[in-house]
Length: 131
Image 1 (cartoon, rainbow, N blue to C red):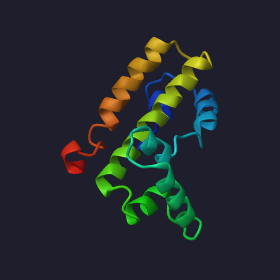
Image 2: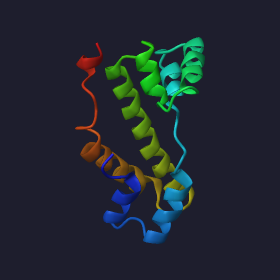
Image 3: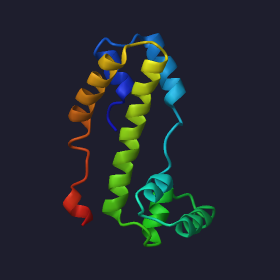
Image 4: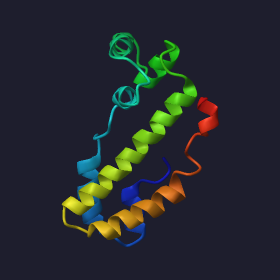
């Protein structure tokens, strides 16, 4: 991801540097794991997650790489899941800004919509690729 939503809010003059550091600190490391997103969408089973995690202990690969290697996910499907994961992270930042009382929700979610349109459209994998 070439630009984070926090950086975007700063560039738009909606967050100060101090506010951006506070929000970025809160949001860093908070993300939905790919396996959880895949389970939510019925793309992978619990036993397959256990198999991936078991294999992951023996190598330095990320969950998605192992799941693709084992044939539990296709590469296009993993790309979709990564895209969903990024969008959820951006939404968490928006929530943090609102809950911290930094900006009203209308302003934050308007900026969020603009950010997604600018940054996610070229980033999203083609749906036909996963079919």
